[in-house]
Every structure is written in structure tokens, then in C-alpha cells.
Amino acid sequence: MRFVIEHLSKRFEKKEVLKDIDFTFEEGKIYGLLGRNGAGKTTLFNCINRDIRSDGGSFYLETEEGKRGIKAEDVGYVLSTPTVPEFLTGREFLKFFTDINEPSIQNLKPLDEYFDYMSIAAEDRDKLLKDYSHGMKNKMQMLVNIIAKPNLLLLDEPLTSLDVVVAEEMKALLRSLKDGRITIFSTHIMDLALDLCDEIVLLNHGELEVVEKSNLDSHGFRDKIIAVLREEEHE
Image 1 (spheres, rainbow, N blue to C red):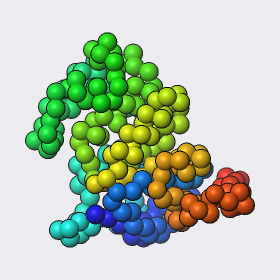
Image 2: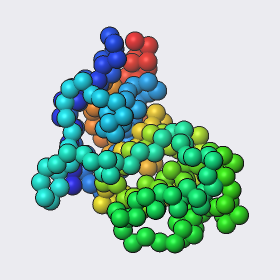
Image 3: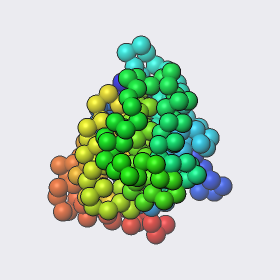
Image 4: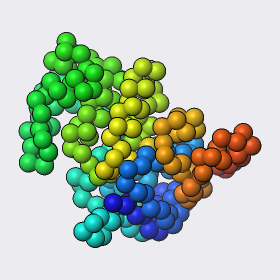
């Protein structure tokens, strides 16, 4: 399976955020989408998720059955700021999600097995989500995407504000889930991208460019990437 973007563009008034993007993402890899804050990473995700309309171009999946458009169930989207129904408990939220998606969920398990999988303590499962920590809300966001098993998983800086222990748990989880899907991990932290991702893609001046990880091991090349990002920041 491959996710193909062709000539994608997006403009906000006079600012062209995405410029004629062409790129192909392959199944079984975690792609690090590297770019400074404001480079357009979230805009790209919002176009893919159809939260906003692109100005031009297209994107689609290539599967064994052929080329087809992206369906809502193909895409999982984990935001940097967790969005969960805070008036529900963790268990109520998970039950609601599994109930409405039951026809499409493969091998549905008891709810406590999912909580165990995410290392959410038994005493927290019946607490209101508004009382969850940022890291626990992020785990719940990730959990519903694990259950749904989307073909394309978009991660918009989900580890940036997590403590070290939770962040390491989430990185291990993402590595274990990469087979059978395409994962795009947005970050502005180069070392995080190098540690977690199989491929690095730089979003710079509205265009995507592959960056060889072997090159990033060179301090000179790292300095070049940082200089490019700083140049964009000051424009």
C-alpha cells in the first residue's frame, strides 16, 4: 500500500503554505515530517483529513486492488492537544467508540484489555476524562486509533509535551504498530525524528524534500537543515 500526493497546494490569503507538493509514502514506515513551527505541517494534515479544502492537487491510496480515494475510515489523526469528551469517563468514552464502530472493528476485545495495553491503571479507567493528565488523554486518543486500525495515521506533534516515561512508552507503541499502515509523524524536534522515524521528510518553503538519515548524522548537514529552518522562520 502507498499513499500518493500529487500537486497539492494551499494558500491563506497572500501566503502560499503548500506549494505543488508531490510525494509518495509507503506502508510499514514511520515518516518524520520535520519543519519549524508554522511551516505548514498541520495544514498538510488538515488537507489530508479534509478538515480544510486544498486549493489544488489530489491524494489517494494505491492498494493491491488498485488506486482509490481516501475514505474517512482510512485516516486516524492524533492532535498535539488531546481532544476528548471530558464529560465522559475513560471507560464510557471507550465503550461509546467501540459501540458506534463495532461493525468495522476487527477482533473486538474487552475494554479492560485495551486499557491494559495502554498501561492505564485500573483506578483511572472510571474517572472523568477531564481529570486525566495530558499524557493520559493522549493515550486515549492513541487507543481509539489502535482499535480503529486506520491505513493512514497522522500524528501532529503528539509527544512534545509528554513526560519522559510516557513519551518512551508511546514511541515503543508506534514502532510496534507501523506494519500494515502508513504513519506520518509531525515534529519540529530533529532528535526525536531521528530516534523514532524510518524516513525523514523536510517541509520547507511549502515543499517536501526527503532527507537521508545518514546525512543527518553529520553535524555539518544538521547545521544546514537548522539554517534552512531558521531562514524560513525569519521570512
